[in-house]
Length: 357
Image 1 (cartoon, rainbow, N blue to C red):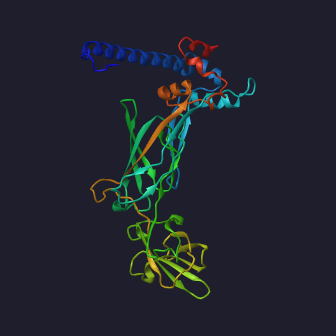
Image 2: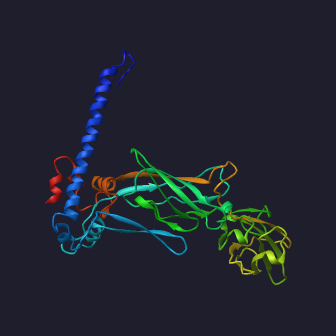
Image 3: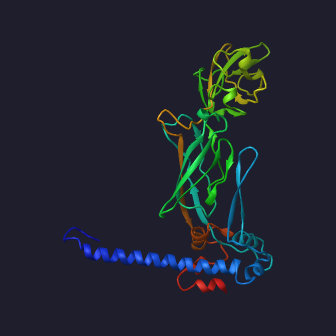
């Protein structure tokens, strides 16, 4: 460590940096050599891999997105490692087999302050093979492109510690999404805001709202204009797609609403909209305001797409699972560190061949 008492030895530093880079490259080549041997066993070398698992595979891991009718995205994973993980868990002769678990955490999404829309994504636990990375999502379909209510985001990923990036799309508002390389499942939820009724006497706070069927055609660019009326036997809460509140603009209504009780406003004029909310402690006849669904935009006032970022970090875990994640994008059946049946130390220098015994 240089302490400043003498000139820096630049030449020596260059020599050691070059040596470190060479060692890193040799370690990478060693990993790839072992990966090639494992791949050959699993998918080639006659039928050795097929005999071992009683199933034939052409790859270690294959990952395919599956989109549901509502816009949700799950993953279909096949391959030698997938079947091996399943067999380890179901082993009936020697008992359940496992390696040390790799712990990955995805932090709650951070939304850009310049966004036109608003949303939220809670922290979640990705799959074990998920890399430490920065996942940047940008709106690709929004209110301003005619897709309010079904906004979608594309993502660019920068893997930390590697010179590697990749991209994918298909993240739709209010739909479960499982992405490539283990991110998810997560749901991009709406963040509703309310105007009018500042003390929440007529209607509760906007964080208790949920909607279904909202879109550009049954809102005013994401705005729902609401009004409370006292009908004697209960209150009526109506939602309109315009501030004029014409009967033809009525899109949802709840009747017989009582104080401090949840209600559901169902569609009117074939709008397809449903609003779930709750009355406040003292609803007032004639109270009015707006509920904003905060649709996202492809081009906000800053001239750029709305965006949010998710950071994934590796919080700990086993060497075997980490190596599989790095080289194959796969994982094996695991247990929390200390509970595994296959010792993690087998991957230390000099112990690798023990894995084959």
